[in-house]
Image 1 (cartoon, rainbow, N blue to C red):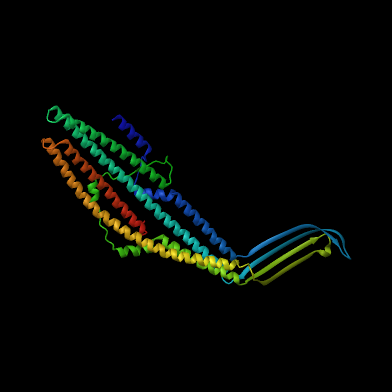
Image 2: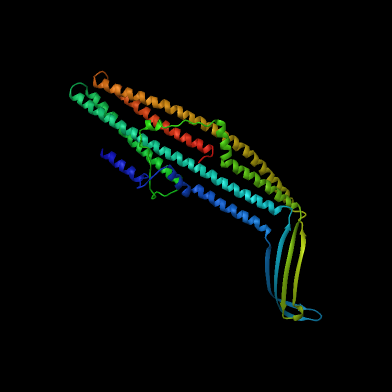
Length: 424
């Protein structure tokens, strides 16, 4: 007993225990604020937002200022000697028209930004799914601990009865030894269940993205598992409704659509390189020297055309590359739609299977409970032996543990269906 108390204390110390119990919504909120993958996705959004600003800057005037401080050596028919020269030049270039180059760059940047937003949505949905799975696993392990504790109590009672019957000369010592063995095994199973709960808590911490010292406790389902099972509400929506909902809500679909828009705009932007650019240029320069006759001021303004006639086929290569990526994105969109449809169908099957399995398992628990009660009565009446009683107890705890696993498997399948249809 002392060893069990020490192990229990160790588990309590290491596990997520604290003054405040956190339910599922609170855990999801913590994950959304701390999860590493979400932080990475948000950083990507900032980068894509900067890309939009960069693309938009192409419409703004380009202002340059140049200064010169030099010493010139001058030899001519009229002048000879050295002269200090100070020159200041200011120039402004304003793009007037580039056959859609910058406008398509902006559209591509906005599409990339939209794609990053959808990537964040996808990451967020996946994190929420992971939190739910970890949360239900903790509840599952906690309920299995309750089953193990119940098994210990049953074995303690059987050992007590075996001792009394042995002292009364009704039963042999082998019953006492057998009862002690069963009690020892049940206590070992309880210790294993407690360590499994600790492992589940550690997994949740990793998903939440918080440090160990920020400890807290997860709010448990302390109700009897049979009552929890009876609260299950059957799924009502049809498969077609859920598939339609999933294709409309899943961020992955919107992500690939944004990618398609991006590459379409990129192709148009690159094709604009085959055409000239029309710009407005205004400049002013002032030169001061030691020789007054060389001082001058110049101002100019005009429209000019810049046309890169040949660029080593780089533009053609970039067009081919972008068209290839555009085709790939369209294929990926079809692929993700098929994958989502498959996931939704599998999710529906999983929920229905879990519903039916839980109901059947509840019936198994009822039958195992009756069987255990009858075996205990037969043992008391001297009609049954310890082997029969142990078998009945084993079937009872096994069926109850299966009910726990099946019920939380049902909750996990519901969470999975919510994820595949894009519901948070």
